[in-house]
Amino acid sequence: MSTPTPKPTPRPSSLPRPQAAQVVNASHIDHDAEVARAVTHGRADADGNVFVTTADAERAVGQYPDATPEEALEYFAKKYVELAESAVLLRNRLSAGAPGREVVSAAKSLQETLPEANVVGDLKGLSATLDTLISDAEATESRQAARAQAAKLAAAEDRETLVVEAETLAKQDPSKIQWKQSGARLRELFAQWKDMQRSGPRLPRAVDQELWGRFSQARNTFEHKRKEFFAELDKVNAEGKRIKEKIVAEAESLSASTDFRTVSQKYKDLMSQWKRAPRASRKDDDALWARFRAAQDVFFSARDAENAALDEEFKGNLVVKEELLKKAQALLPITDPVAAKRELRTIQDQWEEAGKVPRADVSRMENGLRDVERALADAEEAAWQRSNPETKARTSGALSQLDESIVELEKKLETAKSGGDEKAVAEAQEALDARRAWRDQLAQTAAELD
Image (cartoon, rainbow, N blue to C red; front, side, top):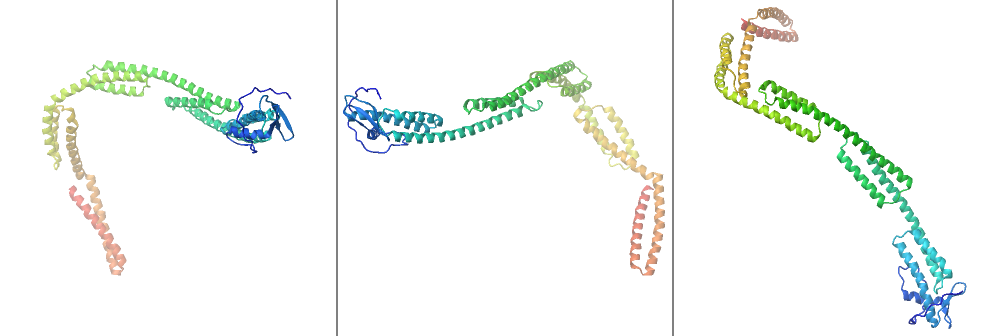
């Protein structure tokens, strides 16, 4: 076998040659110590030919001319240590989380070079090291695949959650959707979706397409509803603006009127129409409402000024009516309805002649006089009831019936006493006492009627 002839290198110092087992799972290599171990697995002759000792026999690995046998052997041992360091590097990559399948591939490739490698060292031990590394890497690959699958399932569930929320937002009744909040939330969901795509595990194409199709459909549905809702709202706002402009125009036309009673009612009607009208856009609604209120303020300010002037004018009338009310209240309590009625009629005539009073005093004054009028009506009704012939007749007839009933009960009582029946005596006495009390009360009523 021909091998490249190495160039002479500075002669290294002589190395010890301990007999030791190959380090299998080291995270780093003591280079000098590994070279010392490697040279024990080969030899070099006086001509610089170097051989590696294998399980079957020796194999020539190359020649190092113009050097001592030790230097030649050490040169090829260092090449072996480079291979061992590659194995350690793969082990460290695996420990650091490198994909197991990549480590398996690299370790197998390295292992395949060992039978023909022009190096001196424990090739069998290094192959065993690589077997262990490959086994560990395959186990790691299996675990990584399981974790990757679990991560994909979790990612699919997370995206499903986003899709369901997006679909829920899209299914809302347009009349009840909070468009600003729901739209913002939908944008947040879309940002989360993009972040999951960018940093999360890749989903199977079919799953990814199915979820994205639903998510995209939900967004499109929401946007379609939003456009329809606001298009309809624009129509409603336009109609509301038209109606309210008409209301405002009428309100402004009435603002200078001095027909305060009639126009006050018209303003109430306009306010009712305003409340029933559709809303215009917020800007238009606020502007129209400001004009409506301004027109009202002009009218009612004029009305209030007029009322204030009238109240000042009516203060003298109030003084007169205060005295008349005192005279009317002095008739209470009414004992002679005829005389009281005559005096109250005079007071009422003077009351009408006195004229209006300030608005704030109208209810107090009118209610005061009404109380006296009601007292007179009640007194007249009571007097009529006392003189009513029908009432007297009914009372007289009832007295006669009671007298007859009392005579019968008196006879029953005597009979019971004669018979010695105490129970019958008690019952007859109780009934007799009740009839007598009833007659006394009715007799008193009859006396009042007379």
